[in-house]
Amino acid sequence: MITRFAPSPTGPLHLGHAFSAMVAHDMARNGGTFLLRIEDIDRSRARSHWEQAIFDDLAWLGLGWPRPVIRQSERLPAYRAALARLRDMGLTYACTCTRRDIAEAASAPQEGATHGPDGLIYPGACKHAGHGDSGAAIRLHMDRALTLTGDIAYRETAGSHRTVTRSAQEMIDGIGDIVLARRDMGTSYHLSVTVDDAAQGVTCVTRGADLADATPIHVCLQRLLGLSSPAYHHHRLIRDDAGKRLAKRDDARAIAAYRAEGVSPADLRRLVGLSPPGP
Ligand code: GLU
Ligand code: ZN
Image (cartoon, rainbow, N blue to C red):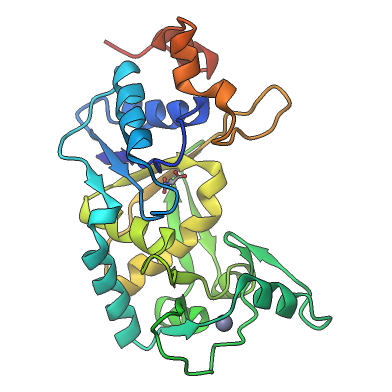
């Protein structure tokens, strides 16, 4: 089995990241492979000192991973190729809407704004507009895509193993025409993660339950691109004392802060409810 931890170098790793990395590393402990991937497509937020901090924190936790580490910022040609393939299949369109255009269209009385994994579900103004690609975001024509794939199903291995299914109608109503390529990046989280998990031969994607809503998107893209689907392990989230999900700005929960206080990696495992690592 091959699994991975795929942080974005946009801030300090906190307790929730440590948990995610340790869960993935533990899963690979009997002959599997634990990969580290740097998800730095957002050049406006990624910083090399945060990348270095990721390496330092994970090494301090006692985790090891194969080198060289893949950086998404070096993989743009692969994302462009996947996007071109979807475009050639007639499954994409260019969208020139601003955030504000989308918010206004979604707040029109007949629309009844609904939210998906990426925020407001795109109301579709540009769908048949025939805009040129340059300077525009590229969206997935979700209903057309689903006529090719049918319902979306994947294997969930957190808790009792089961198959999770999203019907084509649920995908259209609850997710909609997601962005495949942002105008400033030429790709998106969804496209990059799908292309890279396949390219790295990942057989089990380990990540937090907060990303579970994005998984049917990735499985849909795998089907469209002819890629095999990994299993998914969406682990529980580590919350702060008030029960809120930890965010990057929760510096108090930064691994670096625990390190500075003299907390040991074994203490951290206990703190997040993981048993000591096996021999
Ligand atoms: N890069 C994403 C993050 O930092 C995680 C991506 C994934 O695990 O699929 O939240
Ligand atoms: Zn648009």
